[in-house]
Length: 299
Image 1: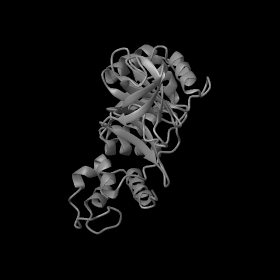
Image 2: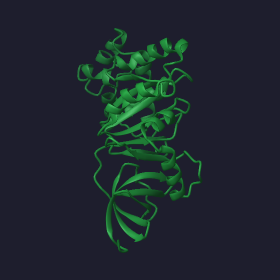
Image 3: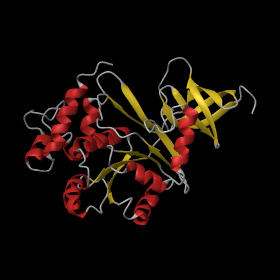
Image 4: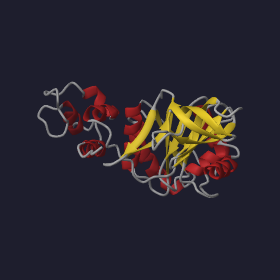
């Protein structure tokens, strides 16, 4: 390929303002023009080749979906063009319901199908409690898949491979849930790929702090994101938030006031459903917290 060749590729890793694009199996180190950092792993990009293995990102193709989190001051793109989000939780260490719910809200708002993976099911004494907590989400219609990556890898593969085939998926979760064990199970040579990407992005041999995309043997891809403890959703407006809580949907439009915020208003259909036990208290509390955050936005 000559210099200045126009290429189209997929961003498979991002670290700071440095990106790695895969163009039909060939890897290119990429930068954006100027100081733009609006590129996400999973983005399809049009590149201008500048040397053997380097290129400039000229344009981002239209995205099907975009998943991101945000705080009061800035937003962080997690992944683009994904069709399924898998939240990895485990019997131990305990998982945070707040993080799971926020991830589900983010998926709903972005139009991405969400699933929950309950890992480490071999920890028998803690399994009933973990199941009970996961059942709250199953009752909302989110599939929960039970696996044990280490104790029964064959079963885990049998459960997850059909769900991933042909899909563009992302795995997210807190540290310690076994996300890496699952990725290593599903992606042969994942460790080798990480070393290659680390070297290409010049981030050191052992860093796992970047988001990266792996192609799956059966078609499709998995994006692995670093474990995080917080998932801010400051970018979601009131209207987006009420629709992102799936259990609110039957009641929206049933309130006395068309601009009802479902917090303390009279004759609110959502609050009536909450009082009747049809909406979980902790989910409604999170909704109130997210509304509060949305009002603080500065950017």
